[in-house]
Every structure is written in structure tokens, then in C-alpha cells.
Image (tube, rainbow, N blue to C red; front, side):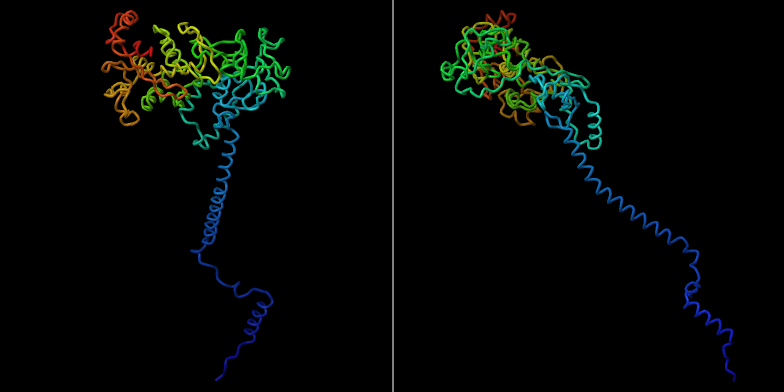
Length: 486
């Protein structure tokens, strides 16, 4: 049997293939068949999917990195946009020229009202204050990005009551520069008043000038000797003043004098109905005043009802003061019952003068006494104001508490909401009690309850009948003389 031998040609082909694979020619792998059509594009889709996943992860990482950056940027921006007065995010910003410091419009108005005569930040002389649109735009962008930084609604309402957006204003220039410190001045001796100098800028010379310690220590006036002749200390700035100077005024209630030159608008006892109560510029001051709540026996429900009414009717503390003062003036004894209660004693830290004629009319009042008058009469004023019929029925329909203003549960919110405690005083036994406001003054003194016996009330009946249109004592209205006069 013949064995099959490979032909020469077959051997040559196999050897050629082997030699080509070794020499770098086409290998066996290059000769493999391609993948089926069903697998075409699968590798591209997988690559795209992986790319999207990787790209999405990169975006998430960028966002997580950028979020703290944006929060830090917003925080830095809010810090830069703080008002120089209230240190909160500026609201309706205004810019002071020429120093370019900015503040809330309402803060700048209050600064001027309180006697500010320069920039609140740098104390530089300022000419005009104008609203700033660029700052307002930046604040609006910040609030859109972070609404939680916006002021409370009540704060914004109060600020809008003080400052009208878009208005310009002027800061008044000081009347005179602050005096240079006298290094030779001894604190135990009195410094001369502004009118003691022979060539002063006020055009009036003090007839009893005080000797300066730095000029003549032997003739200087010692503080232990009391007030120098013809002089007193200002109730506001506490500097020495000449009693007979044209700029000096005296409060007819506390008997304290005011220089009229230290702080314009504050070192002054103004006419009775034109004065501004101290620290009572707007409703925000009423809200923050603990004395107001004390006038209502700390019944927060009744106080909130009154504050909402004042906001709706746009009534200012000064308006309340003027109505209270006018009502007191209409009474037969005027301010005398308040003076007899020592309501105006020790209001100022300086020594008061002597009331030489207690029956004299009261024409001038200082800012502190105006606040005392307003707080003394605010509760009775509210009783009269409620009778105008502007309150909601949910308030007026509440039943009266049986214990009235003397109720010990007024601090209980549920009880205070259910019952009305603003009730006119009534006769009880042999006495007439007036819980009028809360005679709690700005010094935190406890309430004073004035009582008049029934016999004394009957003795006053003829005078009351004349002033009230022949009304008997038992038929007195809620704003009776017994309530208002005491």
C-alpha cells in the first residue's frame, strides 16, 4: 500500500505561511472571521453609556464642589451689604455723600431725627443722602438666590412707614464743632457754660460767668458747692447752662432746664403739644417697649390688638401722646394730679429746680416727661379709641371678664383671647378705683391705684356736673374725670 506523501506544492504553501507569520506578515488572527451583524454597534453604545455615566459623575462632583462656594459667596455678599446702623441686610439702601457709606433708608431717617449731624459710620460732614439703585439691584439678586435672608414682614412695614423709597434727604450740619479737650481741666470743678465766654458765638453773655479752672484754679467753682449762681445742668447733654440765656428752656413738669445748644431738638423743652416722646419715634418702639405691656398688666393679647389697630390706622406714638396731653388739659385740674403722684420726679440724672407755683399752667415739656405722659394715659386712650367702632367684630364680641382689669389670669393666652379685659373702672363698695395706666412709667415703678371714697366723689359732683353736662357721679362715662384726672 502506498503511503500518501505531501506534495511539493502543499509543503511549499505551509512553509510560506509559517515564514510569513514569523517575519511579521499576516498572522492567523488576521485571517479570523469578523463578528456577526447582531453584535455590530454594541461596543459603541457601551462606550457611550460609560461616557455618560462618567460625565454625569463629574457634573455631580462639580455641583457638590460649587455649592459650598456659592453659599460662601452669598454669605460674603450679605456681610458686605450690612447696614452700618442696624447691622442687618440693608433695606432700601441710601448712600451718604461724599463718604459713600450706605445704610437702610429708615435707619438714616431715625439717625437724623435723633439729632445726627454727620455720617453715622465715619462721623464726617455730609451734604446729601440719596437712594442707591445699584445696591438695591444687588440686594434683590441676593434675596432671589437666598430668600431666607429677607427681613420679616413687620420690620419691612415699619421701615416703609419711616422712609419712603426713592426719597433723598439732607443731614443737618452741626451748629458748632466739638470743643477741644482741656487737659488742664479738673473733673472736680465746673466747666464754663457756652455763654460764659465774652466772645461766644451765641450773641449773649452770661451775667455771672463761671471761672475756668484752667485759667484761675483759685476762683474756679467746685462741684461739691452745688450749681453756680445763675446756672444749672442740661437735662439732656448734662452740660452747664445759663438759666437766663435766650436758648434755655425749662420743663414745667419735671422743672429741669435744657440748654438748647448741645443737641438740636433734644436739649429742649418744647411746647406741650409739639414735643416728641423720648424713645418713641415709631410703632417699632412701642412693640419693643416693656413699659407698654406693663400698662396693660402684661396682657399681650390686648397689646397686640392695639398694635394691629395702630398699624392699620397709621397712628404714631406722637399722635397718641398729643391726644393724651390734650385730654389731660381739658380736665379741670390739668396735670396737677399727675404731679401730685410724683410721676415726673427723678426722671433726669441732674438736679431739678423748684416748682414755685404748683397751680401755674403747664406750657412746656421735655421728651422724657412726654413719654411718661403717654404711658400714663395710653390705656385710657385705648378705651376711648375703641369706641370709634373700627375694631373687628371678633374683638368686640368677646365677653367681658368678670374680674376686669384686676384679673390675675391675663397672662394666660387662652383666657386673654376668650375674654375682654379692657373695661372701664366701676364702683366697688365705697371706693372708686382707677387702674389708669398703668401708672407704670419709664423707670419701671409699680402701678399706682388711685382710690377716691364715695363721700369725696359726692363732694365733687357739682364740679363734675358742670364739666360733663349735668351727669351724675354714678353715670360717669368711661373717660370720666375720675379716671383721667388721676
